Image (cartoon, rainbow, N blue to C red; front, side):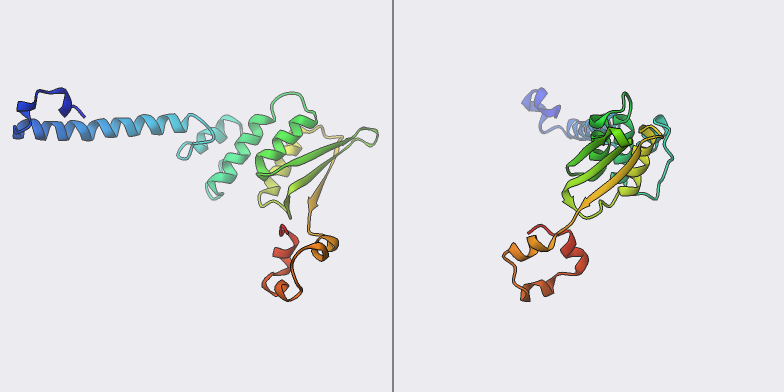
Length: 178
C-alpha cells in the first residue's frame, strides 16, 4: 500500500520491504476493525453486539437463540415504537416472517387478524412474533393468526401426479408451493 508512494530505488532495500509489510498488515487490521465497528452500529449487520441491541430495547438477552431470530426480535421492537395501527402491526409481523402478511382490522368486535399470505405453513419464529405483537397492541384487542396451507383444489389442479406425491411428507406438502 505504502510501497507505491516511495521512489523505485527503495524496492531492493530489505529494511524498507520489512517496514512496508509490517505497515500493510497494520493498515489491513485497522480497516477490518473500522468495518466491524460500522457493522455493529446497524442492526441488520450486527453479530458480536446483538446483546447490546437487546439491552437497548429492553429485550431479554438470549445467547442460545439463533442470531437471525434475535435480530428479527430487535427489528420488531424498533418498528413497534409509535402509534399502533394496522401498518404498525404489519411492519412488526413482517420483521419475523420474511414474507408478506395482511392485517385485517375488525373494529366492531375489537379484533385484528394477521394473515400470512406469501409463506405457507407456520413461520419458524412465530412465538417471538406473537410476543412482539402482544407488546405493541392494546390489551383489549383480540389477535388471531391465519396461516396459508395447500388446499385440495390446488393439489388437484397442480401438475403433480399421484405417483410423484410419494416424494413429499405430509408436512412438506402442506407448505409446498405448486
